[in-house]
Image (cartoon, rainbow, N blue to C red; front, side):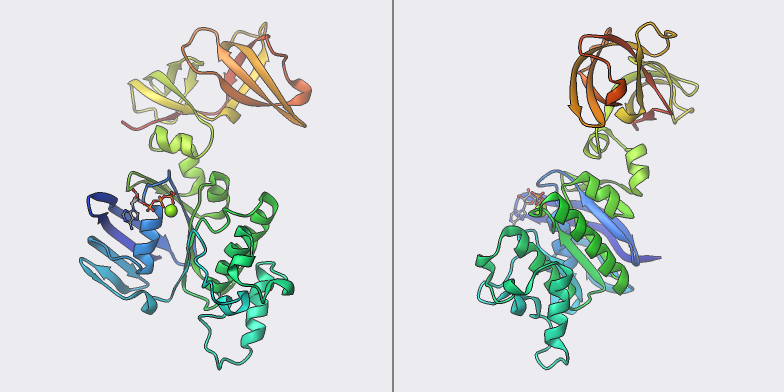
Length: 347
Ligand SMILES: Nc1ncnc2c1ncn2[C@@H]1O[C@H](COP(=O)(O)OP(=O)(O)OP(=O)(O)O)[C@@H](O)[C@H]1O
Ligand SMILES: [Mg+2]
């Protein structure tokens, strides 16, 4: 069931069009990740939903309540939406515990214990609780901002790159903790991230933005397997995009004849192959696939990255992962075969 319904939302700052006709639906209790290049309108979208900014046109409906329509907008403090801004935006004159407790009523019973529990959750020890924001690292500030936003158990949490200043291990732990808390309180979340792995693993829905528009939204595996265009394909992982001639579910391309996921299309088209679909075989094998040369090998423990150049196609070199024990040496001629289906791009 739709919990948050965004319809035709647009916003300009003077001459700059920041958001253009964006529509997105978010299910109750779900997690949506928004990805897209810098300046594509991700923060603007969150700020409009939170009510920190007024839209030029469009509608936002949250759980049956109209938050914004046309030029009218409900004030931010009436929306009960948690927001973790990109820079944390802590109150500089308050210490950590006071920042976290900011939204909790002073007279609330168990207030101090609640603040402690929230700080435990984001793994900030007792030693930090009396510090001011300027005495914290960037990652610690982000965690305080996260605890502050969680304090009032909002029905909708908006997180603008909340983990960007954390190192990999802490980032994964924090992501898991936040996902756990959100599930526990039944909150719905929208997360902006630059990290495609984070988007694909955190979210039930991924929305890709570009130039103020929402280019594609859907389940992570759907977007990964069937990106709408080259931009989405390359944004969500390594992708090899090839020119092809289609006929009856087969593409003729630089990799030879490969099956595609659109049997109805024919003629010229662009197709996408993910590197994990490619297998490397010795040059003298049965002759299927395409001839290639190993131009470089990067050893990284159990798996190695093999850089390949196709022998007779003007295609940039591409990387394929290969078990190190079976990895060919640089300079070798090999054959490359594709498994599964290539995806045909629209248009
Ligand atoms: N207050 C503002 N005044 C003028 N222009 C703005 C303002 N806020 C954002 N913009 C412009 O709107 C566009 C979208 O900005 P936004 O902050 O939404 O991008 P973003 O996708 O969040 O980028 P990033 O990944 O760098 O955070 C950009 O061109 C930006 O310069
Ligand atoms: Mg931003």
